[in-house]
Structures are given as structure tokens and as C-alpha cells.
Image (cartoon, rainbow, N blue to C red; front, side, top):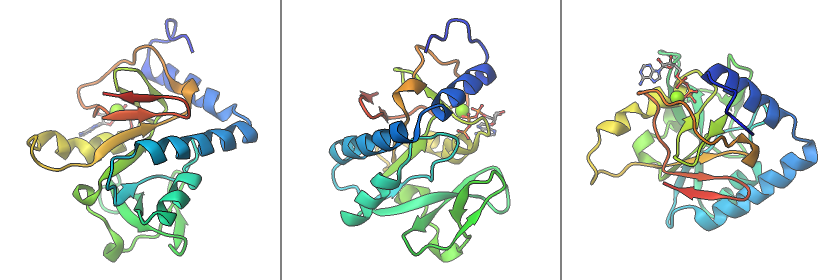
Length: 200
Ligand SMILES: Nc1ncnc2c1ncn2[C@@H]1O[C@H](COP(=O)(O)OP(=O)(O)OP(=O)(O)O)[C@@H](O)[C@H]1O
Ligand SMILES: [Mg+2]
């Protein structure tokens, strides 16, 4: 998509969300399978704990990826809106038996269970949904700042401390040449689409 005429983050979000919602069911299924194959090749070796998400609003579907993880002994978690702040994410263990609920955005999430929370630092990888991305590793989310706030503490860590690899995942049609960046935006480590791997 040409982004020369799109200036603000809001207008970019609108156009990119429309583009991914316009994908057909067949295109979505094909993309989801291709992404699973990409991730099965490119996930960091020895990944044991991976955070994903359940797709909505045309986001690339992680169902094949989450199933593949379960078949290969990789534990998965899903984001849950923090019950107190309402502005951060918690990550909670996810399996086929997890009791689900619908959050205030109409997105399915695990029903809150404090015994199933997986700390951010216990994850090897976080798969983050993108509304938009560029080849420099910048991401545009839905505009709530949920991931940015939740991941802000990672910026304070020393290089030697372990932290999850931040993997942005998206359809190829969500790429723009350059995104406007704000100081609080957390950059990605790698972006994976059905056809590309952008290592940063
Ligand atoms: N670390 C932070 N602390 C406080 N507020 C924050 C922080 N990060 C982002 N925000 C706030 O969140 C709002 C939305 O941020 P932004 O436009 O970057 O959302 P986004 O990256 O698209 O959303 P998300 O992170 O949920 O994918 C901004 O108004 C910003 O002030
Ligand atoms: Mg942001």
C-alpha cells in the first residue's frame, strides 16, 4: 500500500484495518497456514513458552500455529486485559481446555485465573498482532497502547538479562514504507508474514 498520502496514525490504522478485513476467508486460511510454516522454521530454537493471541478484525489467524505449538510441546499463553489497571496485559496459560470469556472489546480471552498467569519474563517469544509495520521494525497496533505499556519494563533490562523475543506477525498487505513512531512505541525484534522474515 502507498503511504505517501496517509499522514496520521489514525488514518493509517483505518486503511490498514480495512485492507486486512477485506481478505477473503480462503486468503485468511492460506495466510494462517503459511504463517504457521514460517514460524515453525523461524521460532528461536528451544522455545518452550510462547504468547499468541486470538485473531479478530482480520488479524492473521494463529490457530494453526497454536495447534502446532501444542503438538510440539510448546506451552502457549494468551493476553488478558489486566483486571485492575484495565490498560495492561497479563498473559495466561492456554490449552484446548481453557475456559474462555469475551472482553470489553469483544475479543475472546481466558477467564481470569491467577494460578494460570505466566509472567512476561517466563516467555521465550511473544507473537504480537500488527495493524501496520515497516521494514525498520516499527509497529502500529490498534491504538490502545496495551502492548507498549505492558512491554515498557523490558526497556529497562540490561542486555544480559533474558527477555522474550518480540515477534510481530501480520499479513503482507499491512506493510508500509515508513511508520510514524512515538517515543513510547516498543520496537520489534523480528517480523514474520506469510512470505517474509524481517530480522531487525
Ligand atoms: N509505556 C506507556 N505508559 C503510558 N502510556 C502509554 C505507554 N505506551 C503507550 N501509552 C499510551 O497509549 C496510547 C496509544 O499508544 P499507541 O498509539 O502507540 O498504541 P498502539 O501501539 O497502536 O497500541 P498497542 O500497544 O495496544 O498495540 C498513547 O496515547 C500513549 O500515550
Ligand atoms: Mg504503539
